[in-house]
Amino acid sequence: LFAVVARQSPGSSGINAEYGWREIICNGHLWRKLIIRNVKTKAIWERLGKRREWISHLHRAAEFGSEYYKELYPKIVQDLKMSNEMWKLGKLNLRKIDCASHDSKGVYCLQYDDEKIVSGLRDNTIKVWDLNSLKNTMTLTGHTGSVLCMQYDENIIITGSSDASIRIWDVKTGEPLHMLIHHVDAVLHLRFQNGIMVSCSKDRTIAVWTMSGNPQNIVMKHALVGHRAAVNVVDFDEKYIVSASGDRTIKVWGTEACEFIRTLQGHTRGIACLQYHGTLVVSGSSDCTIKLWDIEAGAILRTLEGHEELVRCIRFDSHRIVSGAYDGKIKVWDLKAALDPRTPVKDICIRTISEHKGRVFRLQFDEFQIVSSSHDDSIVIFDFLSPHDYYSDFSAIRPIHYSENSSIEDCDSDTTLRRLDSNNSLDSLDDSS
Image (cartoon, rainbow, N blue to C red; front, side, top):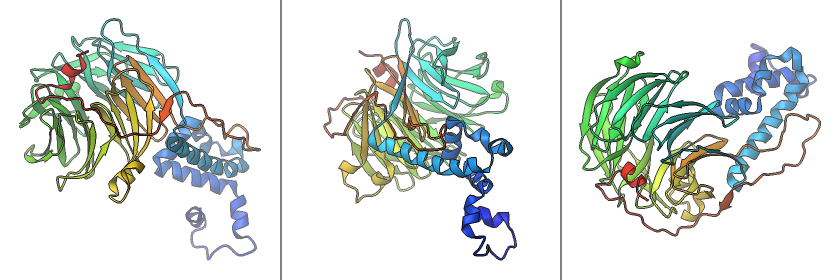
């Protein structure tokens, strides 16, 4: 607030004692400027503003008046605090989509934003769902095999399938735009950003593609060979491409020249998933463990145990790791605690969520929710935003009443190994049983 006040009165020698901080605090428009500043600089404030719908009020000062913003600020802070407590306490609201596949059931992949969920299904289709109504708004057909991986941006959806093709679609209309044929077996994962796409396959190879603004102009640049089994997942930034395989290894390659750099070894079974950001790699394996790695040193920073079967999907942000496994469970871990070697193992896993009736295939999360998909043909939205409405009544804060619609349990460390042989890939293992 002091920084906002200072900018409000440049060159001022200060606020005299009589005017003082009391007058500043009473100035609702300064609180409005502080809220706007936080929305611009903190993604969590912007996302909360959209979810709670107060973000549109920030540019309607004449309509709402200065007192509104003075009362709004502490309510936002309280809302954020309680949502953080919801994660810790395991309190959540649950919404569920039954994808109603006719023949082959299962949702292999998904991605969501503030308006929609896009999902890739075992029945060869891509389905788009309205995030608010949970209704199916569009179904894309064309693949002749299960849709195993996908990513979209504001213009296109790119999907990979067990039919060995990569297809590009218009994100708004669902119109097919282009098809890429390079891999000779199932396309297991892909990522794209900043004019580059990286795909990987059951054929043991990784393909690096260059992208222009035209979906017709996606051209393969390099094929990376080195894994001895199916390459199940890739991630990359401007420095490194990171891949993981059923051969139990993670390999690191240079993004620009595509040269091999190093191999990370430590898992005792095939690796099913990973995420890479900064210097941190987090991986999940058929050995039922999650490992945190320093990509530069190639060293294991921590091993997390708790899942009872293959760890199929993993995501992390600056605060949490969220994992999903074939035991049907989703686990939430404290990332900072995991990176601190002094933290006891029992204090790292915050919560285990049991809702899916089948293997968890994919998940994504943000500060307020986890969205996951499963072999049980469902997409589940676990919402940690407090159910209390702080904003409709500005005269009082009512007690908070939690809605707990899912089974929540403390973490345990019992482990039952499920082997992923190095000659098996995820799509063939998913199709079994």
